[in-house]
Length: 88
Image 1 (cartoon, helix red, strand yellow):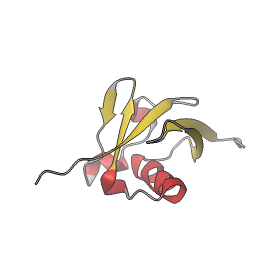
Image 2 (cartoon, helix red, strand yellow):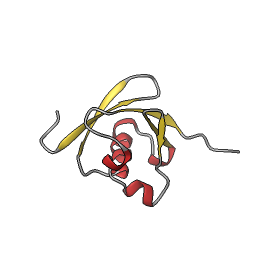
Image 3 (cartoon, one colour):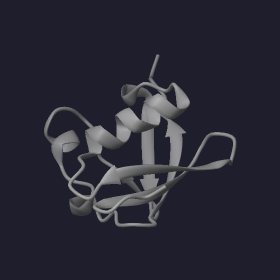
Image 4 (cartoon, one colour):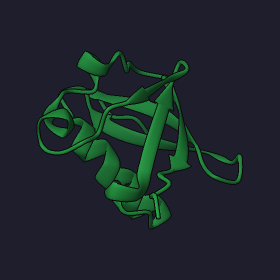
């Protein structure tokens, strides 16, 4: 359940199931990646997050310290989680 000062983000996982992540309104992208790892077991370096058709940049280090709000995320935002594909 959402507490005061938190926002709820909806994440659609690899199997099309939606789950909620509750984070502080001041949370960083890194905080979100770690919350998804706790929930799904996918390490942050394997995660790609899509919001409103655009990939959220998570390349280290500066991008991960950005706030969720600076990425356009707000309470109730919907994200799609996909796996990062590595080249050969």
